[in-house]
Amino acid sequence: MVTIKDIARESGYSVSTVSRVLNHRSDVSPDAKQKIEEVVAKFNFVPNNNAKHLKQNNSKSIGVLVKGISNMLFASIVEEIQRMIEKTEYTLVVSYLDEDADEVEQAILLCRERKPLGLLFLGGNPDYFEREFAGVDVPSVLVTNRANQMKFQNLSSVATDDIAAARCAVDALFDAGHEKIGILGGDFTKSYTSYQRFAGCRESFAAHGAALDADRCYEKSRFSFDSAYRGMERLVTKFPDVTAVFAMSDVTAIGAIRALRDRGLRVPEDISVIGFDGTTLAEYYNPKLATIKQQYQTLASRSIEILFGQIELKKEPVHEIVPFEFVSGESIRVVERG
Image (tube, rainbow, N blue to C red; front, side, top):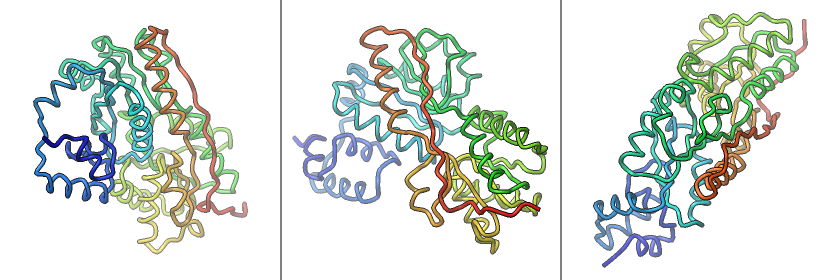
């Protein structure tokens, strides 16, 4: 009988990659998907879903809840986590959620159905945790958001300081001589990440003696290319003299740049843009994107190490801040002050 390991061996891809294709996941390259599907068809392989669910319910599984399907930073972190988990006796159960979804509600459901030994949250809203996390009874780590104020004994966190990082991004625009700065980010009444980064923007404006008129200079955008494109169009319409934009993710920045180019505007000659995350795409985009680089490998490795420490050694919660790096790129123009 052909097994998933046979499919992996024949295709040249790992068992976890084959599993993602069989489960119709989006975090697989088109080439890998095509090759694996060809091998599946060749052997007329049919996954045994009942056996799969039985194994997941009885194995040493780790649940990962990912907020946002277009978040390239999270995709890199998940890939790193998968690479690390493959070297252990644990298995991974990954669930992708809408960026505005209630991740704690989904975690409670996941614990009930799959009974994981631990959970990793990529992105999270503290309001949901404060209200509902008492219903989660397994060790957990909140990744990229801080949880040190929540005081749950089974919740750790590994994060970048979003406030300081966003302030650094906007400081770079002020330091380059820009005074008419726009901001493109999420709905900070719902997205804690956007709320933190907007707080960093406020700090930078205040430090440079500038007034931050959010109604004029802030435009909401989901963390996706198409939403950022439309958000940038709205921002330029209501703030036509804007000379620089801080986009709260690299995906948002690149969607915004496409909108600017379609309007006949050049980056950085007409409008400067800085992103956030430091994804590989930012490094190879034209122009090379100025951004705040998060250390995704450290975020992934420390999250796994902390989670295993809680699961296997019953360690106390840990809350760590991972340093960020400003990458100057090619998308910021220095302007002469009037």
